[in-house]
Image (cartoon, rainbow, N blue to C red; front, side, top):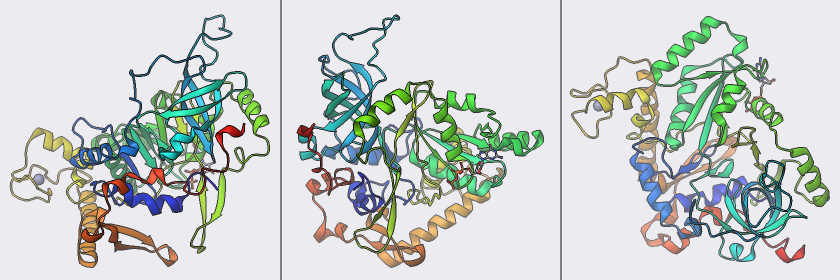
Length: 463
Ligand SMILES: Nc1nc2c(ncn2[C@@H]2O[C@H](COP(=O)(O)OP(=O)(O)OP(=O)(O)O)[C@@H](O)[C@H]2O)c(=O)[nH]1
Ligand SMILES: [Zn+2]
């Protein structure tokens, strides 16, 4: 049974986000950022932040930095780079005690090494889940055998559900110039989705070798006027990749973009340039794990509980990048449905509107910027029509919810995928007053229940 299955993500998602404004998350892209991307994070993010803070299961047992006690020789701090069943691959970031064998540069050879870890039973008992991307405290480290036990988890900055990664601090929105051709409205939808996540992101345009210089510079100018600085690249001709790697440096990034733009190609290219001594580490681990599911096929078909269909479970791992930082090996959302964006919050996802509102104030606080008298957002920018179009779409969705479900609040609605993939909204009964879930239940958040079947198959004492 895989650690994370999409069906369980969907099943439990409502619990985690109930009560927060950033609720009823889209199927393909779900994230809460606790850091905030802009100087003034939208209200909904602050609200989400508050609600997450009050969920003890996510609250820290270890502060993100500074407050770590001196490490024992059998302890290390590292990052969970991959997970399968109860095994976690942890990349060591700092280690306790003196190194056995310092290199000629006096560097600790244990840094950057991978440890194969199980999770301490107590953590399982209190249902503190460990996700790929988590910073963890590893104990009982056996440096020779390269194994250990995850004793604790550091506080998360963010959680992404699809792909399931903790502490994602950067998105790369990837489009292509041609095949498929760069289309401004589709691009806008992705940008709005990325903006609404609250996570800083960069925009890259691939397959740049398929168009001429003039097209590139015209798009560059155009996107600048939207408020973005695109990076042109080509995986095919290896152009612009060094600049891209520089942008990704030191961060944990998930790549998002429509089908066919080259996301997998880019991930594979960057994977091949990583410099850590991966081969050696992997073959060593592989040997040890021969016969286990760990290194099996990354895409696993599992029959859903309802027995209705097959889902493909995506296992995610983080690839270390040469300049530091990590890249998720599985792309993020490729169909932004903007479920997190409300009529009111849409304006904040357009840099053009943000800019105008920074310079002056609208006459009304709750202005939707539709050209009312006293509104500072005039129609003198290219994407105004897109803003209108998206606002319409969101309005229709909100009105539909109000009519059929009696609420506009995302948290009160859930989306079910019916036959032929048709999405249907329905009320979430649990949130009705008489059935309101208790704080305690809320605490058993989605992440605590991701893998309800599967904590017991490998016990920590068994190796
Ligand atoms: N001409 C050209 N083709 C490229 C470039 N990068 C990728 N491709 C091709 O574009 C096609 C799609 O690439 P993928 O990497 O599968 O795209 P993707 O974004 O992962 O697509 P999905 O898996 O459908 O989301 C492949 O045939 C690649 O070889 C490029 O820079 N130039
Ligand atoms: Zn206005």
